[in-house]
Image 1 (cartoon, rainbow, N blue to C red):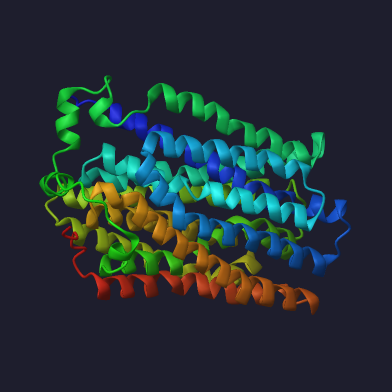
Image 2: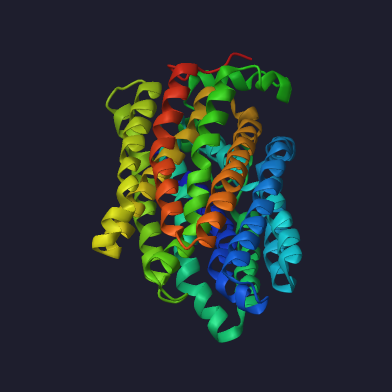
Length: 434
């Protein structure tokens, strides 16, 4: 492996950095929530309702953005498409500092949602371009762990920036980081065919999948309608629809859960929240390593991928008992939520990789966008039916812990349901024939 070269891991590092920034910008508002309640004089019920409205605005925009983001990135190419998305979402993140109420934040979140939707289609496309199939889940796990790092950095920095400098600066300083990434991206990124830093041996290794080689000879454009005719597209989309909302629940509502369940201050929640995402980052990398290990041991790609995903689905189940364990000690609840978040990230690394398992490289961003749109729709539905309705109801009658108990049960069941549906639709993750 030493003779092959390692430049592809530089690309993975760049995508990791972008994903870190993406989730850092996304997570800031969940930690600024109490400051906004004070600034805009929201009571407890208004705080829950207004925050849910702002969150839903982001998810609607993200879902709609996904319809077009993948298609645009497939058309513009990874280099320009990724750069454009990151530049625009960094501007959107900074713009939050100028919002003066629920409407202003909703507009800023809409702008952020549309632009952030470009991250994963671009990231999956870059991974398909730069890695052979057996390494893609591992590479995806590494860059996807950036979502955890962003979520770790946020609670360790944002409340302290807000305390010392004001909540507006939390949005400004985190938003500016994206422009540092842009400089590095234009210095180091190019597709393998044009990258002068890439050795001939590594180029051959990257393109060692014979079925990919055959598919890439076909340069015919593929429409959304044609992609939606494949069971493989629906397997990925339904899997995202059922499981993406769970991660968004952790991201947007975990700080609120810790504050209300254990009466922690905004700065006290920093380490419990960070610990959840530290654990989940291990799951992201380990989740990509396991199928690679199985494939290297002679397992077929589809069997290694689906067996790994089934294991991760079972690892989420203990979250059902989060509040029971939390009644004994808060850190037990934090631990079991962290394990579930780790299992989600392991699942996510593999469900993303099923796209490049089943589709040629020229369509990966488009299919990822379709799946991301369905994931966003699932998040919207969860917010409307569970978070906005249920949480506001239980908050109003002083029984918010019941709302969280129901939500944790939903978290535990989602992945097994998604795995069963995906297995029924595509038992062997067969690649489509264009």
